[in-house]
Length: 447
Image 1: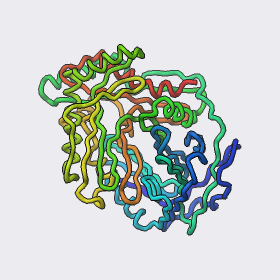
Image 2: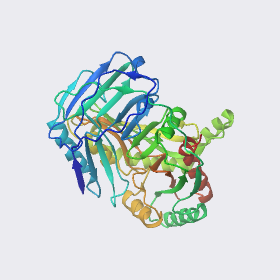
Image 3: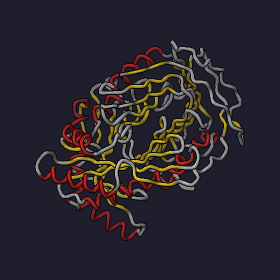
Image 4: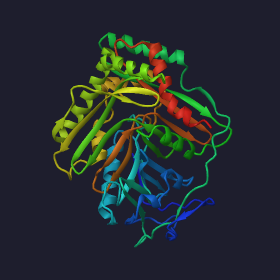
């Protein structure tokens, strides 16, 4: 099912600012005007130094979008057009809508690097039912890549003008956060893991990824910009994102497409860090030799390679994973690369759809694992563990997996964490791993 519209959103009230960049007013939108044709204009900023050191400082409170890693990437706001989809056809509906929007758009791009021109930012449901998903064309995009910086304005105006960029005031931290179990307690979830291990041992499947949730509640509505800034600071090697209330810092790039080259980072196999560098180094070696974790990782890599193969004329799949060090955990990681048959063929979103759900978030065999998740996990994942990212008019872009993430609604945040379960998984150890995976968002909510 899809409900896709081209509308100009009513702009939110601006807060008082510390300083203003580019003092040219943006055109006044008509809140209910149907957009027959979008016009996008990308202006180059003379240098990244003309933007604030943290692009997140530009985000207004309403209709904000973000995709950043190591301080670079995209922030955006406003809604020039929006497509809401659900169900098993959610990816295809979004791709068809985006192709129609992009083919009818007028684009003037003075920069010509990935992320410029007409773009959309999206987040997709994990499961087919209900599969609620969203793809948004923002009104304003600010981006950086290397030493290049730009601003894109998108609307139905014939010649969109360069907008006023305002450095926003400090954002208040959430007050008096309390945490509670979500769909089930830790003990109940351990029982579900034990059930999965038993069924794996019985030969039903090789691996299933089971997730659990944690609910955080504050005294007042939470401003998503607070946890976003903390995540971008503490997890700069991850992709910090926000789309329609779903935010997080994912370490896993599901797929990137750039001028015919496709890459995917696979993470599976995890060990918690202690904070002692010497001990963590020993743990990294233990992880690299762990038969349980290597088995789990092999399933995930195989899943990605097999899913990408139909789209690629050549592929490179490393035989041995490396250990990715993050502030709270370490993962076994493999970067799979390929060359698409036709650079004008499958879009990055179609590639993401072909990869989802990989063994890293579903299991092996995928169909059996996803059916088991629906049967025993006991919660609706929503857009957790689904593709999240951006796409341009040519179909290039980046989609990660929405991990280390949470869903914000008013004063409540629902945190998610998942673990790969195989034949020799220990339920108590898996619960400890899930607790470690809650930490990035949990810490980001603190003052």
